Image (tube, rainbow, N blue to C red; front, top):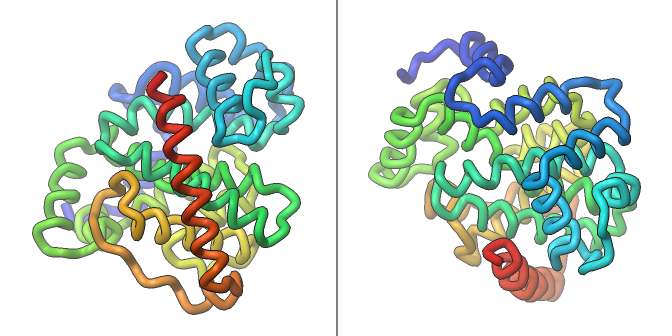
Length: 279
């Protein structure tokens, strides 16, 4: 298994809609998202036809997570307000969240935590589009879900190996698949025509020093991931808290007081959001 051919893996990942275990909503979504000419209206129409998806999108947009509590009543309004890229990311995350919960208990909570911390950090750094960094945080581990769907037994073994050997899930994936969840998510983000900055964040959240298109946004998601792990929120495949990359730390230029503030905000929002998602 360790010498799986990366080219073959990539081809299989990119043909995700042909994989039998992929839920139908994700199959439909991937064709919608992949279309680079898709309009806001077409996305609204697609979502509105599916009551469950409509409910989830509105629930997410109106949650404490998003900062528009209870103000958005239609998918059209949500799409207009948030823009195409954010809505594409949200659609993907609500469809993946269901699977996420089954794939790895705690991964959904971890991802929500990273999304919130990313948004708070983005606002702290004065970024104009904190929502896009939020989506990068929400989707940073989507590669784990894809690998679980495609190779359930092998991925389960990978998680067990990480625990038994005391190594990160990232290293265990490399041992078993020759590639990591970050690479897998990067391939799909490109195929789904996500903005290049978003692809960069997702693909390089473990190695922010190589990010060229979005070094600040990638450093933010990297830092958010580590903060959420350090707080023990959710589970992302291993219990190790990695060190912050020195270049990312320098890029962010945070003081200790900033970190305390971010953690406080994170805990308040996660609690609220988890309640809303369970409701």
